[in-house]
Amino acid sequence: MDTRPIRNRTTILGLLFVAYSCNNRGDVVTPVVKPLMEAVYASGFVVSEDEHQIFSEVDGTITAKLANDGDVVSKDAPIFIIESGQQSARFRIAKENYELALRNKSDNSPVLHELSAAADAAKSKMEFDSINAERYTNLWNQRATTRVEYDRYILLYKNSRNEYTAQNSRLRRMKDQVALELQNATNQLKIAGDESGKYIVKSEVDGRIFKTVKEKGELVRRSELLAVVGRDTGFYLQLSVDELDIQRIKEGQTVLVKIDAFPDKIFHAKVRKIYPMVNRQQQSLRVDAVLEGKLPESYSGLAVEANIVIRQKEKAIVVPKTALLPGDSVIIKTDDGDIKIHVTTGIKTLDEVEITEGIKADQPLVSFTTIH
Image (tube, rainbow, N blue to C red; front, side):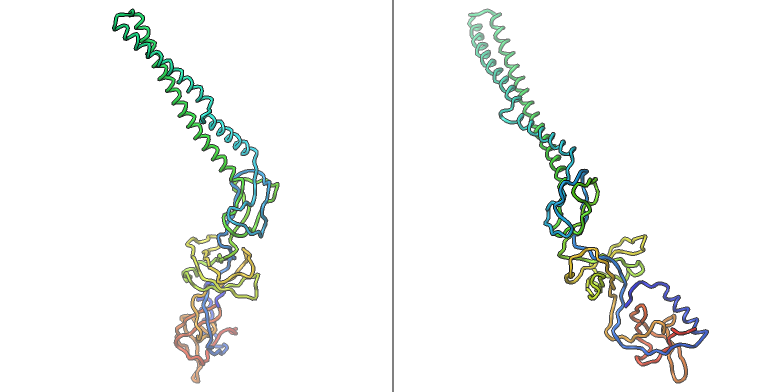
């Protein structure tokens, strides 16, 4: 089984061929028929499904820690409560402004009551002056009053009508103003409430708290890590594959997994996703694989080593790689001496190679492991 990326293989075998050309000594090996697997080595970690880090959205002090490492939590369950004197003051002011705006908009609003009373008084005066204006108009038509009296009552009516119109306009403007002030105060209270909601740190999923990094009484800053939460009902592998091998990886391939915490068990997984971004420091790419079956314990972050199966065969003619010369040729032993022949290769591992054409299963070959 290929356990890790190997580079410069041609160079190594080329040196062996040069050594053989200079000294025709070596061990005799016979091909073996056995199962053979070609795989790509990967390393990584076990990660819980929907695992994510929770960061603080505010500055403040942790006044309550409601869950601990390993606790099972439901979605929206509070984990931390953070308090800030400044935020409390903002919320109190927003609430007071909302209550004032609500009173000003209500039927018992002092502001609206005063303007409404002024409008009613102006209306009553306008109606009274309207009656007098109509009466003096009739008297004037009958030549029963003077022009001065007629003009005076007509002017009084016009003035009271204008006053009523003005009072009505003030009342409408004030109603619009208090309605707008109530809407603004409602919005500000909602914003303050939402901001206060950020002081209650909650779980985003039904799952388990894998890690907390803060305790009651500690100060926290905005964007500071508080906890790591994920689902404990499912886990996947976050693997790192050498960029030289990534073109051989396909979704759906079988993965054989060794987890350090469970040394006596081999786990199986399937490649789920191949990420296109290369890690420049490690010259590798991320590959995710889904575990088949459950882990014995619900631990996230366990170190793993894995072999992603590229191809395998139950019965393959296998020889040591040290018997294969550059150009895919071997030295066979015959009664007439050593003969170099070309062969066709198949599956290759770190130490062995499959020969698909060119030799028989019982054909003795020369291996160069003991050349000096």
